[in-house]
Image (cartoon, rainbow, N blue to C red; front, side, top):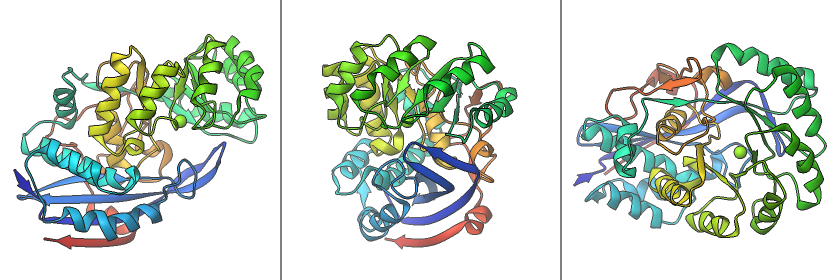
Amino acid sequence: MYRVDQITLTWVRIPLNEPFRISNGVVAEKDGIVVALHSDGLTGYGESSPMAGSFYSADTPESCWQQLVESLAPQTVGRTFESLADACQWLDAVPGSNFAKVGIETALWDLEAQRRGMPLHELLGEQANEKPAAAAQSGLAVGLYPTTADLCRTIERYVPDGYKRVKIKISRGHDVELVQAVRSAFGDTPLMTDANADYTLDYQPVFEQLDQFGLLMFEQPLGGAMLEDSAKLQSALKTPICLDESLETLKDVQRAIELKSFRIGNIKIQRVGGFWNALEVYRTLRSAGLSIWVGTMPELGIGQAQGAALATLPGCDFPTDVEASLRWFQDDYIDPVLDVHQGLIEMPQAPGLGYRIDQAKLARYKVAAQEFRA
Ligand SMILES: [Mg+2]
């Protein structure tokens, strides 16, 4: 049994190394809301990390900040929970978006892992009834570029880090020639595409062409609600379809499984509102015999480290999108910053998340902050 004594919210903004362009838009800065939950002398950290604008979902840093400040933090502070399960189920039922709740939810898991003296990935393994690996495999993801030469130059720059696969973004009119260029520059490097829901079934011939390149998967080719169309497309292709944006709730996952809309599930902790729901999706995909991997927004340090921890679970057959902190961001507020060696992210052995939160950096990149006491 424990009580949440105090909550500190810090909204930070860190510039990206290069603008990130996908089929729906472009961003140059990364916003994240750091949630610190204080309980019995311990502090657990979480991050609420939607992309700015309507880049990936309808949630924005502004909308999540508002929900956290006006509703979620005031309802959570001073509350006593029987257990982690009790806390997660209570939060899941409270009105609010997944992208806002995830900051509090994942901080509860950090607290629980610290209280029990175990690293976060081991707590996740215990809850999933599985043995986690000691490191997560990491894949390189790159955005859209003005030319194929720019695209290949960016991939080239990260070859020394040993990322385990390359993912490129595609959009209508920018697809087959990109895959062709990367294939001819990088041979049979494990490669996949992500369309961020840009296509409709009318574009099936494009995917039939892409089907010839032996790609690992086509991530989210079609618009979010088109599970039937995705099933039609999947039945016409050898390459597995991976769903990301479409899998918002457990119901979506179950329906997509029934329809055979996909063969691979991308789990994003942010999109599903935390670890409790992520593990439910994980169990559901695994018992349906589908492959899994862990996606990112990408988040800043806390969110990224959480994704890496989840990606150590067995069944996460494909590398995660979690990359080194300095791959995307000019700086990060975790210490040490997240690093990738030979394509691997080693799990810290300290209890909880296992990274220190650099308070000076939180102050430096702060947009707003607010404190709640019981
Ligand atoms: Mg995606």
